Image (cartoon, rainbow, N blue to C red):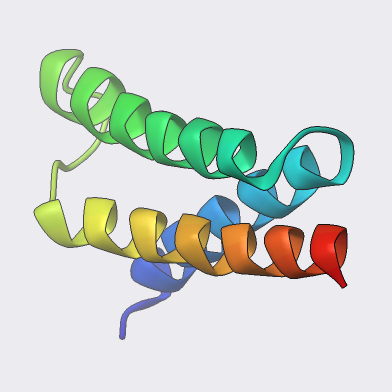
Length: 77
């Protein structure tokens, strides 16, 4: 996997995990997914400031789900 995809995964994970420290884990997941979608659709596609790739969205969402599970488990164990 290219470095760009890893960065999307790590950022999705970081956002979801960080938010889950202070709020319910599902809110962290939601914010992580929304940040991923906003970056790729608004910044890359509409403003043409980057390269729009669906794979970037997949990696960001997967990272957000992993972060969600970390947050969920830390809140319930």
